[in-house]
Length: 434
Image (cartoon, rainbow, N blue to C red; front, side, top):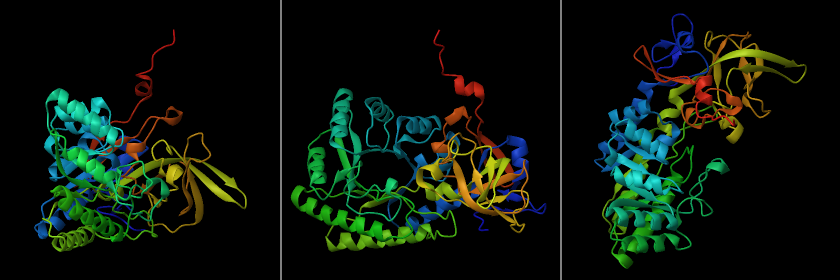
């Protein structure tokens, strides 16, 4: 088994993370339970930042909070000197509630509402990434009402396809996001934005996909955009101060995944942008990136209690856990794959192959197919690795199942950062018919 960060096996033979026994965590906080390795999240954040600092490049590393947004996580990002990428009023509100410096917040999204944009302007956030012409006109009208000026980036779709799951491709021509570079929309958007007295057009943004294991897509996107920047400088006198190449840096979920270090992504991106800007006689822009999954994904483990089992002779054995698609919808949504062990005996030799079923009333609620495990009884604790991204943030109350608690662990200490939902929480907003 491959262990990330501070995850390992302690003297008692149990799985531990952050110096804390996972069995003890379940006794103290219950199951299902999201557990985050704070030291690993800090290490990843510092790795991205250091790669820019070593090459003396002006930059911003913005944590893409859609991967996992809570007050505690936002505060950790601030401690590490990151900027913050938000994509909704709720994520923006969370950032502000956490005391995150608004000037380091970037607001994304393809359908920002009037109230969301007003919140952003009222709190003087650092940048709004404008996604489409509708939003541009809406933002302009709000700025006129408030007599406010705002920094913007234009989101560009450069026509580069990342080799990943179809549902999370975002940089190709046929995308719901951004102004298309190939059909001329991006050029029209730039001219429109430059003509607006309320906009300070800092530069350009693109995002080509998620869970990417090579740099080729990023370099191709940079090439297409910088080439267009040279044309726009000649035609409109516009020179971008910022080039944001987004996120999508991959992590290891299973042995089939082969991620590269943060420093390699950054160093190759810097080299390419330097070469391109020198070739076209452009000023070197500030480079922004937006790691999300790569900061928190493999820092998270979900702990479940095993309940019922079912043998289908000659077919398979099912083990059901006390969570499922209500706390991790990715296997049902993306056919995502995970690795797992028993928390009490992670080094024991496998003796059977089982499939891990969730408890939701849905045939598709399967977390892991064909998992080798030792002989397993009910009440055992199953630890599923690399659930730190899009587990909690995509959790739901399907079947009216309460969402799990979230614990941060570091240096032998466990801190509860999100309380477990109760049944009372689930009906709190309900109103009686009569």
